[in-house]
Every structure is written in C-alpha cells, then in structure tokens.
Amino acid sequence: MGYNEKERAFIEWYPRGYGVGFKVKERLFETQTKYQRLELYETEGFGKLLVLDGTVQLVEVGEESYHETLVHPVMLAHPNPRRVLVIGGGDGGTLREVLRHDVEKVTMVEIDEMVIEVSRIYLGIDRGAFEDPRTELIIGDGVEYLRETDESFDVIIVDSTDPVGPAKLLFSEDFYRSSYEKLNENGIYITQAGSVYLFTNELIDAYRAMKKVFDKVYYFSFPVIGYASPWSFLVGVKGGIDFRKVDVERGRELELYYYDPERHETLFQMPRYVREMLEGGEG
Ligand code: AG3
Image (cartoon, rainbow, N blue to C red; front, side, top):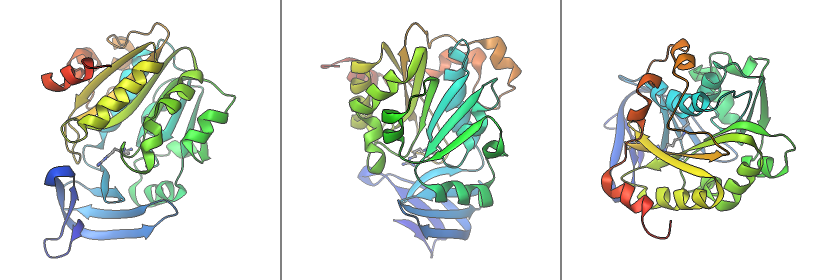
C-alpha cells in the first residue's frame, strides 16, 4: 500500500486489486494530522501529488480537469450564483475556480487545517484564493456547519474524500436534507461520487438518497488523471434549474482549459449498465 521505496513509486490500491500509481522523484512531506495521514510527493511527470489516507487527492498536472468540471457546470447552470458553499477542497483548487465567477461570497468549510496549510506552502494551486476578500474560511465539520448555519446558498459544492471512510456522512440522506434546506429557492448542489467502476454501489446509494431529497438529480462522469476513472459526479437541483443547459456565453468568457461549456452535453456519460442500475430498482 502506498509508497514503494524500491520502485520509487506511489500506488493507490482500489478494491479488487486495481491500482493507480505514479513514479516518484522525491518524498516531500509526510505527517499524521488530527484526522488523517497526509503525504506529498514530487512525481516524475505530473508535478506534485497530494495523498490523504493512502488515496490520491490530486496531481498537479491536469488538476484542472477535476476542478473545472466540478465547479463550472453547476455555476453556469445556475442563472446568477452569488453565494457559494464549498465543503472540503482543502487544496484550494475548487475555491480558486469558484472565484473566477462574479460571486459575492464563497464560504469554505474544511475539517483539516493541515491540508490547507500544506497545500498553500508546498502546492500553491489555490493561487491566492484563500486571500481573496470574497472568501470566508471556516475550519470545521461540514455536516455540523450545514445543520447549524443560518446562511443560505445558491450553489453547494462538495469536494470531499471518498464515500467510504470519514467522509461517508457527506453521502447520507440526512446531509442531503440539510443541504437542500440551506439552498436558496433556485439552488444547485454537486458532489464527487467516486469511481464509476469500483465504487458503483456507493454511487447508486448516493444517487438514490439524493433522489429522495432533491427536486431533480443528474449524474455524469469523466476521466481524471490520478483517479480510477471514469469518476462520477451527482448533481441535485432545488427549484427549476435545468442542469442540461448552461450559459455558454458566460462560459466562453472564463476561457477554460478542460471543461467545454459549448459541449456541455458530452458530460453526461455513463456506462449503460451503470445507468440502468441507477435508474432501475427502487430508486
Ligand atoms: N477530492 C477527492 C476525490 C476523491 C479521490 N479518491 C480517491 N483517489 N480514491 C479531491 C480534492 C481535490 N480538490
């Protein structure tokens, strides 16, 4: 599991012995935080690699694919997203992308301060997002925060670790319910939902739980460098937003690198058998 000194490689092992790995130039940092084991590597070909509890969070080269696609489709589907909540996302990549929009305020709730510290110092992919005057950073538990806050949001983005382990509660019906309550009249919610092939059951469970809560639920998937791809995403809508449509004009102005608003329809990929599992059964 993890770093192999002899091979000079880091490998994340998924269920059934499926591995995703990188050749490593250097081990930069390793620590046990209050919540998890954090590792940072310099890879041979993909820049820095951030690992939490043995799972790849991001590789520097190509991180735009994940962050742009987590953020911009929902931001461009919402007619006027002014108040945004980000849960997790300690590396700052998601926050950075949200701030490219004309938002009033972005609240980010991250449980593990160390992830933010280490990312800021060694990674820098936030590119100043934490210092942006529109950012409000809260170190705390996202589940508790959403249950208790008096604030409401146009968009909620969950950039968490996997639906297995510590972040499991972020994939529960209860959590979806408090998210729904804290969304404004017309609101949109997105969460990463794990590997399509290897966490299929977790994806289906999350989808069914979301269906019980949101007015409309969508799913899509795309390949992410460093994850067992394709990776899945679930979108929940409160009110009348149609997630099949985005504001292409606003999207063009962003000059994105990976996600292509003009080809928004290409996002909705899902292997047929998974689609049937999602739509079938008691869901
Ligand atoms: N968000 C976590 C994605 C989950 C990766 N899971 C895995 N490798 N098993 C990453 C944070 C990026 N901002």
